[in-house]
Image 1: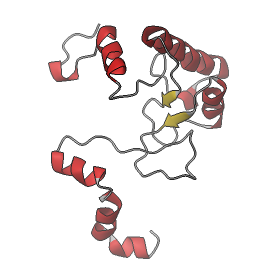
Image 2: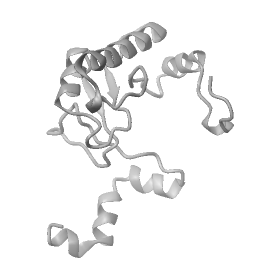
Image 3: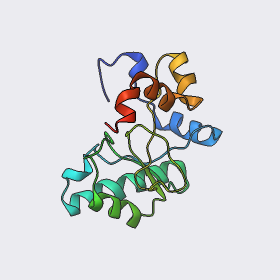
Image 4: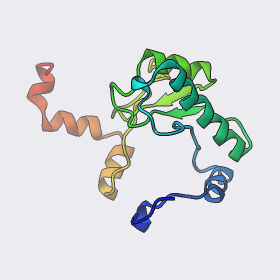
Length: 147
């Protein structure tokens, strides 16, 4: 148990996780056993991190979980070995923290996403799909020149 953590950052207990899963408003996915950065793991450790965390989540929730989220999730925190292990463990997709949109051609083992902003107007902009347009408006010359 973590101590000296502000209440807003406190961890959920398993009863809360199960309740959220049961309500169906969120999907509970798998992370890793110890928050290891998978691109830095040896193969045996990589398998333990991925498979054991999947086993625990599925035991607690009582159903299969096929969604994986890379710890930290930035480019370089995952690689071909970790992607292969995730697929071998039975996951259908994996989320990164690389910002961006996905389409039908997106690699399901490298799905992009946006972090949830704390500001409601930023959230609305992201949800409406306006973030790429705003980025282009802020930096038009660089975009036109391909930089």
